[in-house]
Image (tube, rainbow, N blue to C red; front, side, top):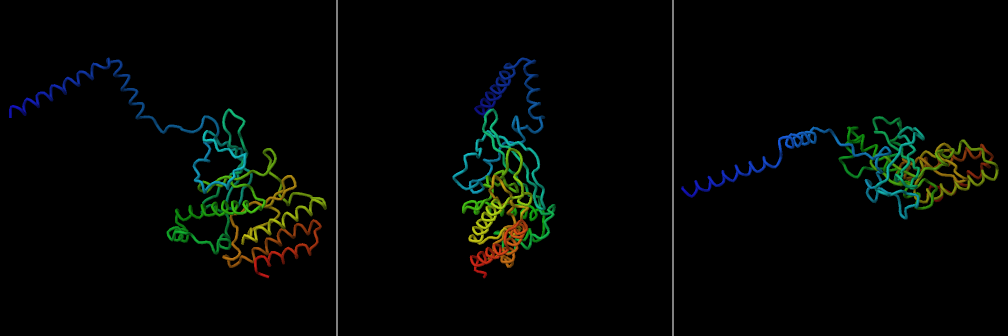
Length: 310
């Protein structure tokens, strides 16, 4: 018992001495200053970790490898972790998404690129009412996601918006890889798809419907349209909504846009109808400009043969 009491006494003495030593470290003024600083640290609100310039840090590194465009990456892509994104305005509003012009740049350098950022609305805010026709044949991998989308729960609506974005990004990657004239897909993150901006300066390229080609230009554009449709059909796809309003002309090149509703012509029960409609919609504009109707008929027969539907 005596030994235990001695140990307790020694412990209490040490503890008291330690407190005294601590108190001697700071003067009263220093102690007050320290307490004030510590209080400020805990009372502070959220710290702003945004970039010193721009609207946000570049989201390039937030995407996983499969959520980025096919390699080799074009030289114009900015992958620097210190890059920032500037939002420059709206390029287009649509039924299911809005497209913004953004600039990704590295501050204090000349490294910068303009891109198009397509941001999909949640399914509860979309104005696209015929989605079922396009998505027939597509299935959600997880039964949980499928049930949520069918029941239109909040989670399901978010998943639906993400599936539109993913469908467009995957289509852009596949079609770009086989030579279809589409914007290069830079990256996808959630419901935002960032892709190559087709235009001059900050001005978007004109839609095909807005152009007035001469005879030579018309023939060139038709040949490009045929090749794009041919390559898509060989991959088993129809655009689903092809028209002179979602194709643009940039420096004589016909570029196909807006691919979220891309249709698998074999899995979708209406796949053949979508293919025929794409050809007719685009072909009717060309015939109105002077193309012979038999050129459209020849393309129709060729593509239906490629698809095994003739």
